[in-house]
Length: 261
Ligand SMILES: NC(=O)c1ccc[n+]([C@@H]2O[C@H](COP(=O)([O-])OP(=O)(O)OC[C@H]3O[C@@H](n4cnc5c(N)ncnc54)[C@H](O)[C@@H]3O)[C@@H](O)[C@H]2O)c1
Image (cartoon, rainbow, N blue to C red; front, side, top):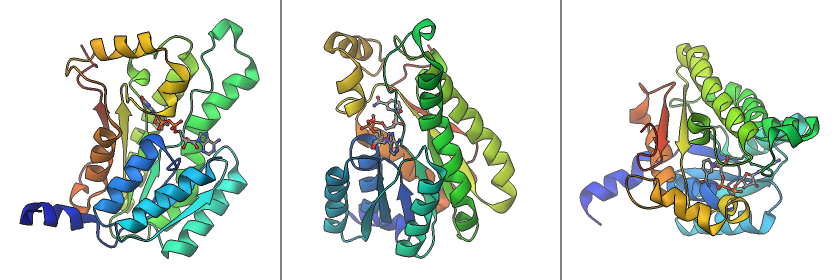
């Protein structure tokens, strides 16, 4: 490791982070990226306790503190408990990453029930709202408070087949991010978003996209490859840095140049 790399690695030393949906996929990558830069991390998970335990073990191998906490992000009571347990473990909070989210299923609007609509909005936009709401009082006590939300390329281009409401919820996350940045700016809390395009090797696309659809997404990506979890993790780590304190209200598109074009 070079001296420059060493400095980079320690840039989040002492930082206390909570990453939602961090048992696997993009959230796991974000949690590991923050830990590699020196942060201690609460690894939130929905249902996959085993996966979260593995992420915790990987973080501990990096020499950082970590704990897994399960909570349904569509429940205010569970999200509030998640924040209580986070503060209990870390003693405070500097970085909140609202990564948890879900397509739930590819359904055309004319066939979608009210209940399905509510679930999609709630697990993406609602979860972002209630998690940030619970975290703000704690972040307000941090020297370098950061919120990073998870939007999507779908927010720009309407998403793939059967993901209209998901696209709308992710567009909502983008608007929420901009508005909250204005609301919290005077308190020094930055609020930014990342909008990944096609990130391969996630349960998301293994569940919801055919092999042909995945090949088409790569073909439509100017940079000529699928995105990797690390591409998203690197952007989130950058937004979390103490030196990123003048960046707020922005969304970083991590899509290999797919949008706009
Ligand atoms: N994979 C992609 O190409 C892609 C592109 C753009 C945006 N995203 C977004 O990135 C985020 C991570 O997705 P991923 O691709 O890693 O997929 P994933 O399915 O592996 O991760 C989703 C995470 O959200 C959590 N989650 C879902 N519903 C929950 C609930 N009710 N309570 C608690 N946790 C819940 C899951 O436990 C899981 O850890 C999501 O918000 C997704 O919408 C993914």
